[in-house]
Image (cartoon, rainbow, N blue to C red):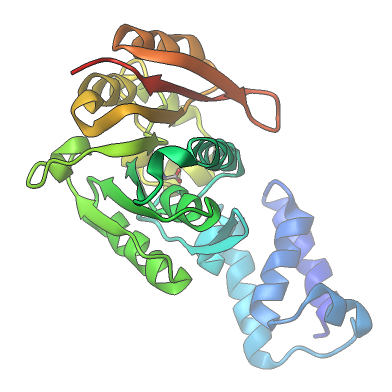
Length: 291
Ligand code: GLN
């Protein structure tokens, strides 16, 4: 079978299985299975696939038809221009989350005179694949050091592997939010988190790729979806330097609630930022309380 025939029949199979963006996914999986670039495909679409490539492609299309996420098949997701390894132990990094990274980098740059002569210290709670922490460290252009925490030891295995592959030094510690740090209490200039924020009762209505393949632990924000925002906002005072920042990714209907929680805990300049789709996505503020 040649490349073009294989692609056309794969696309049909994905369409028949109701896979969203069937044409794109058939394409990405062809790149993955045949190890070719788009340019090479168009230079010679009649080139025969080897038996091994055809078998691998068939296998990939079968799994994708069963709604296994594309990224679990290829094992990677691009985020902030970096390639992150992913598997079923971590949430697949979402493009929306790049808004949090971009805003964090902008604030670190703006505040850089505060860190002169030392490293900026960054904490990422519920780090998952480590995508937020590692890309902030990579993009901020300042001497900085970072710690990521997660309740899941399996997620941290992935985060540590990503740090190693990308050659971005960071430490990853297991534990329940700040509980991961208790052995060595320390303060940070910025705390970031994209915590689980879906209401428990909504999880069953999410698309199959998310509901069955992302870790439930990375999705479930309990009854009202706000559990982690409450816990983090109430407890972070002991871990933030004065005028340090707390920055959250939020669900698009949670801005008012999360901003309210932050103001009640002594945060100033609480701001909201939308994602590229125009939905509320980031809430952040400066910790101005004396303690
Ligand atoms: N921080 C990780 C991400 O944004 C994981 C988030 C989570 O598990 N809820 O991709």
